[in-house]
Length: 327
Image (cartoon, rainbow, N blue to C red; front, top):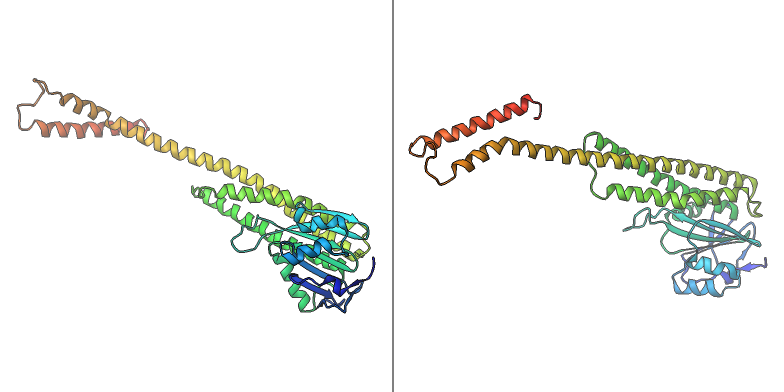
């Protein structure tokens, strides 16, 4: 690739514009700097900003085949080699305010041995952590180590979110042991998060695995080994996701069973109450007939005797239901 000068990487509204110093630190890109294997330049853009969009469309340092991908057209995790460069699409847990973690953030990266161009729209907190390390002098020293640390940070956040989902499942299981049903929609949201994470993290694991096996010129053997470890770690997280999805299916069945049992108990109770008061309803209906000859209609004690008889009748029916083990 031709020499890349700092003036070609000047973007007014860039999120970050750094040159790695080869020692774990960074300096700002200026017009006099030159990107090299030992000191590659990193340009991080928000592709929705006007100047960044214009730079992506017109800059000569990017191949025409990657412009659309960096501008937001690529979504699913993938890796594509393009001559001297490599285009990578990754997904990150969304830790932005007013967003759910499963509303994943997309990161698009084009890398060569001298240059890194990454784009996103929403903030990527995994990248922010890596930038803090770089500003303290303990960050990546080359293009390959930059990619390894980025993938490691993404996987850390993914693993933390998987662990949070696992804890939520355990809490729901404990509540069910106490006959407590989760709030409406809680299980549906949990299953959606598990499925979305499984859908995008599986191809991302494949991306990491491919990067560890590809003989990319800007990655050494140690970086490939670390990338394989990241792939294995994400693979273990995917195994946990599969187990969690199966557990939520069991939990859904258990919740349905508890709700059905609760409904059956209420229906049974109402039926027993109706049976208890059925004889009294018959008698009150019978004695409510406005015809002559009703027993006790001429006695001032008739109503009292009738009420006592109803109480005795209700008690007798309840005793019979209890003895028959219906109550």
